[in-house]
Image (tube, rainbow, N blue to C red; front, top):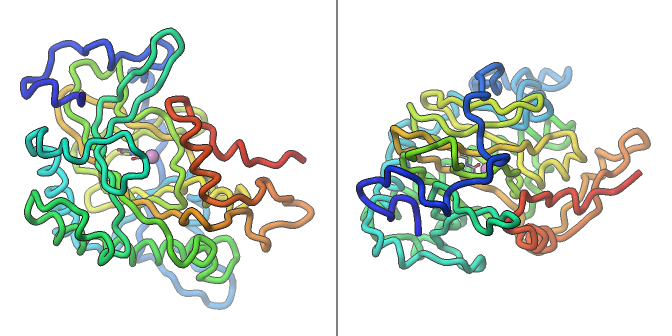
Length: 347
Ligand code: OGA
Ligand code: NI
């Protein structure tokens, strides 16, 4: 049961299956906007004068090393298209529950699915997160369009156009990040593979009667390689760890949030950080986020890129296939996952 299926008139108190054990609650009063992730203007100089990385490459690289998260502005994706993408996804979540129910599943192998995240705690059992998630692949669009909803009627068209823009933006980010690591421009893209597994995971967080007792998404690291997330303006909820503290990522108009995910941390041999983050709820407004994930496919072998290994920087991870990584991810379902740690090498 999803939170907002419970009632169109939101319940006044949380039913027990949404209530976290005390030590796992978000402690919202302790979250202060003390520091924030960098905001990077993609119109910044991106010219390599043959004297090392361009200012843009340096900024991005530094943000990936220090924060693992940043926001980008002047990224070239039209504002109207972003608004339309958020609107169709919102409409999808506002369809009658019966309509969304056709996608509801616990089967991970399903390509198009609606599900709820949960955590399992000893003595308590499952605690459901205050959110609903809709996930589906988006690249190559011609392979997937026919799987996407026909209701709302504009979903396929808007999403196809949005996917094309985000695909181009991700290529550009991968190139900038490769340069930031001192690699050939196309290196990261090549390593992640010719047929990447590219999917989205729209998250809908209804207003929550008591945000202190529950979580929208539990603290986690993203398992893919790269994430470009669009969040609606005016409602915050995403928080990241900076210097050991939770810090909100406030929505910036016309910006995307970009973050490094696990595979990029491994490929960069630990230089680029996949940082812990979570989503909290609020009691006033529904919130929507639309992250787009870029991941290797199951057969791709991932490990630290050879050029980034030397005597001072021995490999931090062993090589593995992405299938192995995903198996480990599912094995840790319900727990505070520590997936890449299972592939760490000890020196
Ligand atoms: C995610 C995620 C955060 C948000 O979907 O992996 O971290 O802002 N979402 O909803
Ligand atoms: Ni995430």
